[in-house]
Image (spheres, rainbow, N blue to C red):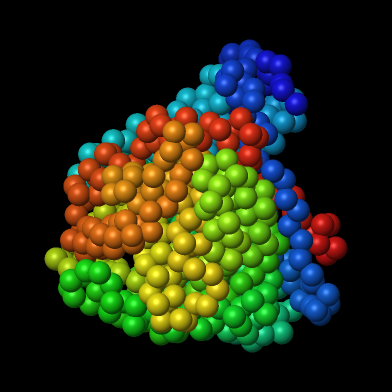
Length: 551
């Protein structure tokens, strides 16, 4: 339904927050209108019900799931504080239009996460690049020149003390009440777990939340092999910190394992060491050996919260991020099969109909979409985690660009892996054209999330690189076709470029690459407008909870 001009009463009386729509306590409530272009943007998400067959689970396992969802709800409140500020309830209560309120809840604030964090309420200020992790008046130069202990730490917030100097406050201190409540819930859930390794993980994760020391619980998470239920919970990804990419945001996924699909996928992770050796780059950029304990499994996601639930929804997970754990144990790759299927049906097929030439539309398939996503996650384990010239880890050396380049690496090396495994006849489903064409359609899907996020920047760098190297063509009707030979060459050359930048810790190199190529050009913007006109959803939003699951 086309909306008329919509207004919301937004009255936020606190002035201590940074980056939020603010109003002093002495001001009267004022009407804040939706920015005009958003009159037709509130319906970009398609609602999908998160459900799963839980009939094979015991009564105790279902009790455990209910507790994990309760813990996830508390995680959600912590992410609101990190992303927006402490007045979430006041903010939401002051909005009378339900569609606007829903949009605010999806975005965890008045900034559109799928449109470069653009404010969509009149009167809202720009979102701070550092979210709520740093003081609003702090400059990058002030931070970098400070002698603050642990200033690049994942699990602290930077504040000013009474003297105005920068100081670091640990999550375990700043959020102590909420984190202790979560820990108690996880410890109770552990008593219901039938799998001893999972019970041990829950207990160790509870301790990690209290101490900010997550490595031991990451190792415990890597050791789990047979648990039918899983949870990813804590401060994990650093995408929300767009100032430096240092601080981790709170999130949670509650998962039920798809045993049948997981058995099909188990064989692929074993090829990581062999594929590492064959990467199209010199030996010094592939000297690290991926962990041999990495595994690959499929899940139904039944609940998300915090960063995992903000804006566009994740369809696969590759964790842990700790470089030491990765080198010793590898990573676990979790494919969220039900979320992936929902996105394919609602978004990928319509994109193919609108932007791919008719003769190649048959090459856009769910199997290829699943595989491209899966091998993206597997490919995070390839390449290099530490620079070759003593600049520290790649993440430290590349700062705020580290996440974007890592996502770009995973995308491009995932395609490289598929080509290699097809040649080895390890992959027997489909042909290379399926994976390439589905990958191109997937770029159109992902780039609609905007070019400000790590994934968005990675998509645009790759799209523009492919365009410059003739990996695809565009006809006079704005329909795209893959050039198989040029695509293969572009995959190899872009893989080598990214791996070299990472290994060299070349901050200036990646900074230039992102600035020059990490943008949406006019021609592509016009083609993407076709999808909006055709009312193709940009992403999905979850209808979820214990009631839906019968818990």
